[in-house]
Image (tube, rainbow, N blue to C red):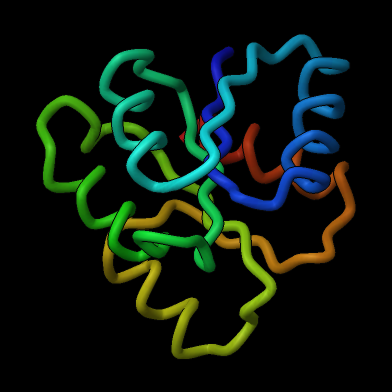
Length: 120
């Protein structure tokens, strides 16, 4: 199972990587939206974990681009963010997000969310 993590927060990204690798997931890291879009097209992950607040392009922009491309539109995307407002959640879901997790989160909840999305 291959997971692409697109997040500019180094500490959170590393913790997610450690947690997922302990569960035998292959983890690909991207530090920003441009890097993430490139790696999604090249690597074809089974799921993308995408932060909303990032430099250059925010997660909404990246989600929209992922869903517009025939190469990546089928990949489920789970939004990771500290923005828990209903408006942002609704926008992410309208753009095609498969799920939404608000930081801080329990890593067990993250694993559960990934498994639910992949099993759909």
